[in-house]
Amino acid sequence: MYDESDFIIFEDLTLQGRLGKIREFIDPKFEKTGEQLHDYFSKQGLQVYQHVAKHARRTVNPPVDTWIAFGPNKRGYKKDPHFELGFWDDRMFLKLCLLSESKANPFNAKYLQDSEAAIQQLNDKYGVSGDHTTKGMQLLENTSNYIDRYSKVKSAEFMVGIEWPRHDGFFSNEDQFDIIQATIADLINIYQIWVIRD
Image 1 (cartoon, rainbow, N blue to C red):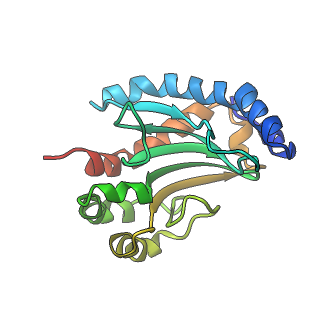
Image 2: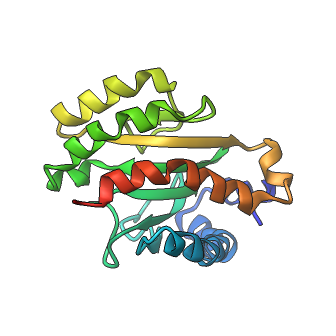
């Protein structure tokens, strides 16, 4: 499904050119992944909607990354906890996200704190981040600091997930979808803490 040739889209430095390549080559793969994941989410008792990035606000510069999001709201995803599967120019990522827009729900900080133990139990291939606009994940030992920052800083965000560098064996693995699904399975308990309200 996903392979190293997908990164060629970032070699087009024009807005319309890159957007066209994203829509032609990447978005159909995202949509297929979404269809494949639908049954998994349903089996977990979760109603999850997919949202392929449209980059509608781009008017000059081409997007530096692109993604598909999976969240609980049919109308959008940025205000809610959600998964993102996407590309930077040198890596692919799968992350569970609380963006700055999620501060609209003041309880999200508490739900994030409630999930700290589950995050710390992940294995060391996972990392955390506090900014969805930058590449890279930090070691899980930084989890407490990022959670604290999310609760205190208006613009702060929280992401936990994994990245696959461009030349990683992931891109030639025949069981690629199984890897994606297993990654979501590792993160699903955290997502449930964030979205299921007692």
